[in-house]
Length: 266
Image: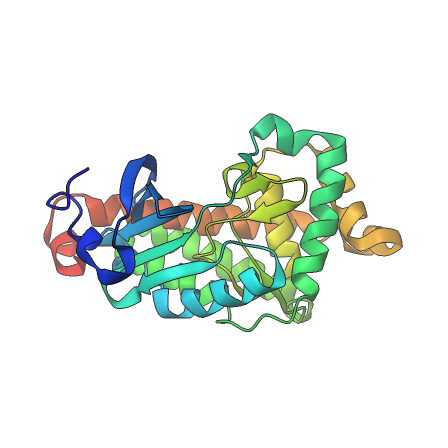
């Protein structure tokens, strides 16, 4: 790739870097694999939707530095959060597949690894599910989105005092964000925040299409002997995750589509 295609390569910190190939693309950013002098790295470049969805890249940078030090994620090499650019080390390993995620031994390992993450002393932003959902509904600007938001707030009310468990959570652990290195490493921390352990578990269950039996195994691995105490709450957290995901999709659809709202938010 030429520097004219990637002007970021003219940055002194990236001297000698070469773009090898695109790794992934999504509505909020694209990622590229780079070769450096003696290693490989991952370059993420934001799209306008990152700002529309209120992704806080400065807070994320602080999180990444901590989780790398704690051994859960990649180290930061260089960053320009104001302009939506991030360069992290490339974790040499194999990304899980959905089949990997559903294997009993991996469910057990993931539950234990998640408990380690939630117990880690990582500081970061606090996830306010109601406010985040309200923002997505506002961006979507539809009656359907408002109804989804109302349903989500009703579930938060039902959970009530149960929403006191605050752990540092990844909140997006689909199989694509899990790397096998002999240990389990996590990537893509843009939604990580102080939140709820059961919400993080629900995200895993939903994104990896776990059956009820697999969800139960994950909770047993995570909670140990007290798993049964929390089993009845998981469906509510799963519904919470489903509604927030649906609102996220609607917000993206509205922001990407034609019309004054999309133009204004960009």
